[in-house]
Amino acid sequence: MNFKPLDPLLHSELRLAVMSLLIASEEAEFSYIKEQTGATAGNLSVQIDKLSTAGYIEVEKTFKGKKPCTLCRITAEGHTAFENYVKALRTYLRVK
Amino acid sequence: METIENNELTAERSLEIITQQIEQSRKAVSKSTGQSLYVAGISMMAMSIVIALTIYLTESSLGHLLWFVLPLVIWLAQKNNKEREHAPVSLIGSLVGKTWWTFATFTLLFFLITIIWNAVAARLYAPDVFVHIQIKVTPVIVLLMGMTVTITGHILRSRWLVAFGIIAGIGTFLWEWLDIGETLFMFLAGASPANLGIRAPILPCLTFLLFAFFGLALPGYMLKRKSL
Image 1 (cartoon, each protein chain N blue to C red):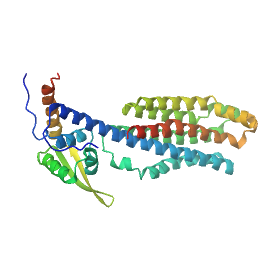
Image 2 (image 1 turned 45 degrees about the horizontal axis):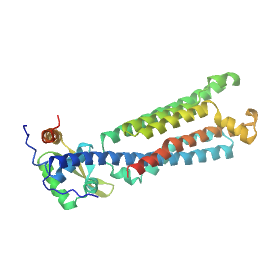
Image 3 (image 1 turned 180 degrees about the horizontal axis):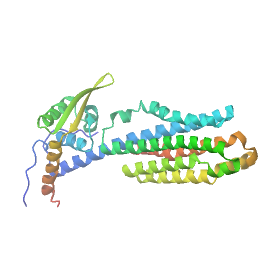
Image 4 (image 1 turned 45 degrees about the vertical axis):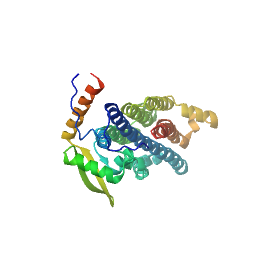
């Protein structure tokens, strides 16, 4: 059996959760991602930064009324990386 | 809530995380849509009562023009929807939104065209002819609304929302088309078609009230409870 290598950037619980949330959405707020993953703001911020540096997601700092709001959305590169990750995962799970 | 940390993981755990997060995202959209349907249903029920009272007190069917205020009432009521505020922007959410915008556009235009057509026809034709050529607004609108609820149910993959859409849409369409409300009213009030008078224009309000409860408020409440 030929195992494909898993993208190390995505092979981490929190980063994978963030990418999975974003793959199902066009964009999501930082507070929503924090609520869904149960991660701390600091930890989530670091992981989002890593994904953003890799070009997998884009982060937009904006305002919702008077409140600051951070929006995250997946990029085309992120889509491809996620797709490849799932394809590689199938080889480990022996799914055709 | 299970906290997700950034540690290494197995292939099975990876799959579990992906499935779990996609499902959570879908639930967030369902919950937000449920809340919107619930708020729209309650607003429409309240509006039906207000319009019925207006028609009764003013003895004029012009009270039906107040239906144009309904989108504004729903918009104001939705403004403080916390679930909607935090729901992610997704393709499913956009599809549901666009489906309802299509319904709103068709309904408002149809309503306007009908008002103009019926007003012109009432002046041009004799009452016995007008009865046959007038366009009945209520059955068409409840049918359109039932279709929209059903399509929303299909998008959200909620079988019972589909069922509620069909039952409420077809049910209230038949209720209006077969004049069940009028027959029931005449039976209960001991009135005849001739002396229904100003009470006749109130009857569509009852149809909309029924639809708002069975087609919007009840399934909306169930949808948001199920998605908790």
